[in-house]
Image (cartoon, rainbow, N blue to C red; front, side, top):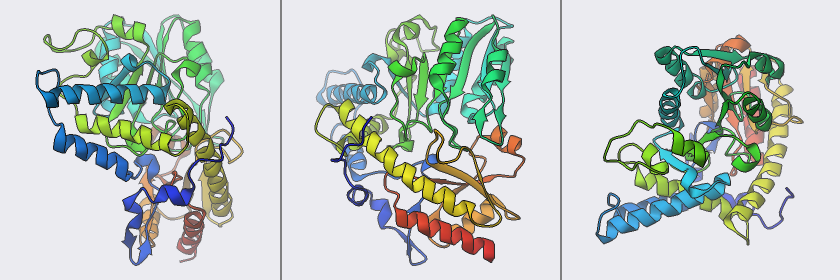
Length: 409
């Protein structure tokens, strides 16, 4: 995709985020914690408030606010469908990606037999590891884990291919590592699954904020993401290939819908969060124009990608020059997200983050639920800095200078 000139500038984008007005110890706060959850624009909060104040009701009843809720939820399904390049009826909402994955695992497991196999990777967030191990424990399945190279941060594809057997029923792989920023070749994983008649599940939680999802191009059977990583509220979204969804034996209450994506949505969901998720998609689309929602999303993502690449390269190069700082994952020239995990020799990740927070720089620390990655790296944890649509060059420079000061202290 080409960069489109009429995408909003970073300074214009920043005006949408009240959180950026915050100060700490007399300094403007710079939020580098986006990989754990981005800040939220006014339009998202306004959409949620509007719903709660004026349309709040449960669904499918014969009075106006219930009907309005039905209409708004359908619009949200269409918005997330455009976001994923998927039909609205294939979009499922839930509390979060982890809960949706556990629910999907239980559904898929009903059609598998003892001795069947699932492939996961050591590079993944444990939301795409533990649900499959839990299912294996219950059903007598076998989980096989593909390695990654700690030096490069890349998945060991030869090892993954060697794990596939005639008993493989699912390959579950992350589109991008939330700890190292590695972007995996998802079409390749999907082709491997299909070659043996297995299904494919993609964790796109860290991928979706940086690369616009296209389930048609990826070819996957299932894909999950989290709107709170791309400027929305805390909720989860799952795509499922429609013909597969209809065949699944889903755990559900007998009075609940028996057809369509709604049969996966157990109980009453957070309607306001779903509506907020749709508003987050529309916010991203509003950064570019004119055109269809999908076309505007493509234009916005293309330009934001170029900006983030430049910021990330500056951050990687600046931190790499500081003695005692080690940067992990693929270098800036590789196919990766603008998320950097690093360590400071002799200092814990929590200590470094506390020192940076004193200067108004908010970063996350630890294993980020990618605990196998941290174990394979042989470290106690990472300091993680992520670039978002509101990140500026000045904030990058502040961070580099502050890390240097921590090292020299």
